[in-house]
Image (cartoon, rainbow, N blue to C red; front, side, top):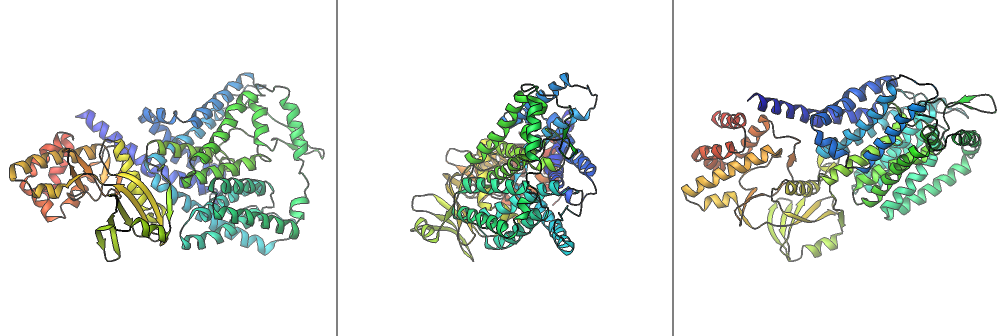
Length: 613
């Protein structure tokens, strides 16, 4: 009994950390630099709300760590980190600074945390990113307005609020969220969202230009080229045309913003760095070695202003191999999985980071700060998306845009199965498949971020991996009126409500007991089907149970807590006939079946909930 309580408590802690703490941690990681006083506050936020919880989660369930280590990006990062730490053996000045070991661990926890979050709570990823982008937009708008009031030729906007205290470093964040709004403009099918995103894109672009940094312009160019390449649609052509026109206007109206500072000593810095790299080309100078580059004017810099050169200097060609592999693999995954919009976003952010890293940076592993937005955050997101896709919590199937004429052709001679005041909801098509329609939701609701048609398909795929029969998905569609639809093959059989109506009392008892066992299996596997009732459970021709209409469903990391099990029963009690069969006439049979799969404590909670009516 004590062991079962310990397991139950461990599951509750795991679920709380994954479902609530990690989302908050990711939101603050993406947005905190815009409003916290200094970077040390960001470090503490990331450690407390993301890195440490992720470490606990991986230790609590080692299989999650094994799952993470199936990802090539995670393996490459570990190889890179192990070599970097190994290089401490030939450090010119051996150091006992434990922070050198914390940095790769903290970055690896970023990979692990994104993997856990996108696997178990991926429906929150889009709202989290949108919320962070709104924070960045509001702060950037205030900065741009304040900067415009005092602007004089030669001035560069730093950031104003939060921990942003350097024009170039600030431009990394402004550019990061510029890419986000660019992605929204490229992928959204809703006119209201587009009307909001275009001004947001203009504001973030203005913030980038106001910093006076040319590095983000190179990075944005590379990101635009990459996004156009992987999207390959009409908007891509418009985007490329807009980029060319914008560049031409900038060169014609403000050529000095590009040319007045020349190369900013980049060529000299790179030449000096290459000479130092040539001293130890294969193994590097060591992860903790000091780099000093003296400019002709006497100023001394401590980075080569190129991530690639920094990697070669510190860990040599051997360390450079896993590093360049991470960049290449991240872009490859973005291209391979371009049917999933989130991969387009993540790979475009990575392209931006690669572009910025061509002329900026040099440190190979750092604490959470602006440089994380260039490489580590995009790579961690790609890792998380790959894990989620492998577990079927993220769709592999592309969503097709269905024109009105094509929709009419698809639905020709269709039979209406279900309808409401707005029209058909479920259609049986001519080929026997079903088409389920979902009305558009308000743009700021969860149904807009994660359409119910896609939830239906994703939930169906995940349930099938758990051994629970569900309809086979044939296609996903986006309609011209902002509705969405899913096409699937219906399962043979009767709803459990229909089956119970056709049976006598003795056979009904046996079927209710079997349903109790099936409901317990759902709860033990973490399946919370909000709309669970006898009309959404199918008794198939082979005698097995299946679930239908699964859009309103969530799969938790652990077996359901007692409160969710009781809430599930309360929903079924709203239907008079279901209540009579399950909770009055045959309640003991239901409990008997439930107890065969669930713990005595969970069964007692079920009995307690029903008896309290």
